[in-house]
Image 1 (cartoon, one colour):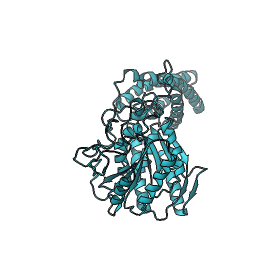
Image 2 (tube, helix red, strand yellow):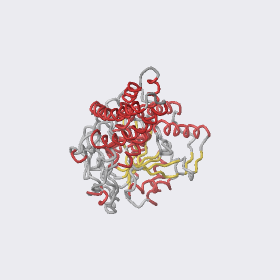
Image 3 (cartoon, one colour):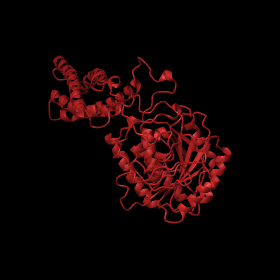
Image 4 (cartoon, helix red, strand yellow):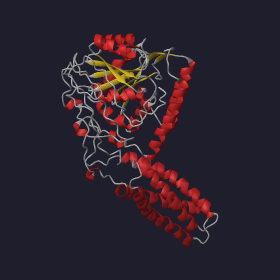
Length: 502
């Protein structure tokens, strides 16, 4: 499917309704592992800040991923003392696993997370989530590398952070400035479609999430932050860096092969209803023209190099046919992926076959031009041959683009079957965390089930001011929030494998 013209799985963004003051609009998740000393002061400070400054109802969720100290007891004590605090227990380690599990089960329309050390100044929290509440953006990240950010940290961490972001820019063409800042937020409707595509369960989780969101065309808002490094951080830098590089390689390979169904994340153009169904306007024409011209220019250079090489041991007609054949195959593959946004292997053989028909037309034009030149001059100069071939290829290029757009890669949106949708793990009228454990994820890159309605189109869950619902693995909900601690089922088939480094 061509992503430039797809109407998308996600609906147009809308401002969250101002009503339902008792319903949590923001769920701030704090993933922790053996943080018995820092957890209490962190949650109390965050809770006090939100009470004083945040204009909507909120929830703070402590996501304990397999702590072995007294962190679970501290989390339960905070839950008992503060009405807006919830505790969440997982039996496997991994920050990404904790975030994905809690975010997938939350009923709040805005989901955020921050590191337990609160290295980021909390005054950036409202600017972080405001674009998501207003419907302007899909994700938001804090950036320590923005010009107006103020950062205090050692030279070693500064070097590692900047090097990592340079690697992301060079290898995955990432345009966001800071992937590792532990201060991010996402709209729930986006998370429900995006999270099943994210494979990592550790520290590379949010980088992978951002790369996929950016490649799908989702809007990422960046907020400059004030940030002070925690000298007592327990993150294993070398191991984390190694895992991150493995993740970069894996995601880069998936993007190159087209294994990711990113068209599921596309949105319609604009938020104005008049912009959602623009009639009689060619979709993506400008972008396709630019892409086709770039691919065509490179293909022409490739063709001329091949022609010059083949001309050394064959006649002009044979050299032209061989060079055009090889360059035509490469040209069709490049235009298929880059110009018309067709991903995956489906239909590749048919597209190449149709491309060969287009190649035959181009061969007829260029061969006819050479025949006319040879008829006019018995021994034309090599430069003259090249000039004639360039002119013939320009004419063939225009015809090739028209045939590619109208025949080989046509816009099939009008005849496409109904879009597949993605499952919600909860309903807005149900409690935040489902009974019986979390629904296992489908295999890699396979979103599941029907897509949920947007929060703006139906009321959120009601009655969640100070009461919630107790959930334990294998048990039914009892209708209260007095003890929401639970043990979750593995969210991926391989989550029970040993050797999880975090």
